[in-house]
Length: 148
Image 1 (cartoon, rainbow, N blue to C red):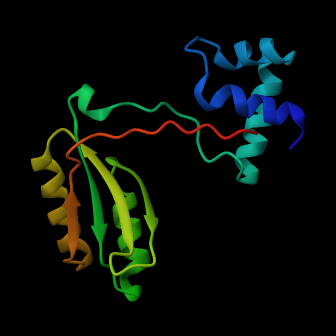
Image 2: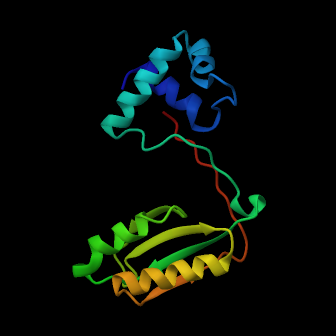
Image 3: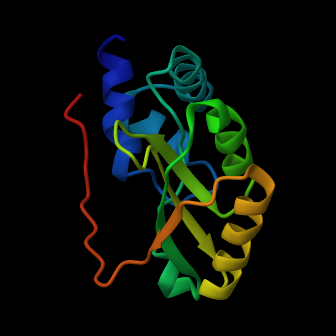
C-alpha cells in the first residue's frame, strides 16, 4: 500500500459520503479520479486488505431483532455447519473461537421468533444441537477507525 491507498482507507472507514458518486467525492479530496479510487479499492479488496465496504445500521431502530449466537460444533461437522450458517441472509458475520463454543455469529431477522425458528432449522439441518441465542440486554457500540 502506498500513501494514496492509506489516504483512501482513512476516507472510506467512517467518512464515505452519502452521494450518488461517493468515490468521486473521495477522489476530489485526494486529487484522484473516481475510477482511480475504485480501482485502488478493488485491488485492496483482492489482496485482502479490505474485507468489505458497506453501511452499518442499528438493526433495532429499523424494526429488526438481533442476537449473538454461540455453537459447540464438533470438528467433523465444522465446515458443513459454517456453510449452513453463512447461507442465512440474516447472519452478518461469524468467527471461530478456541472454546467449547467454537463458532460465534450474529443473527438479524424481523423478530426473535423468526431467529429462533431459523436456529431450530439449523439444529435439524446440521445435527448441531448446542446453539445458544444470547440477545443483548444493552447496546454498546464501539466505533473503530484504524489509523492507516
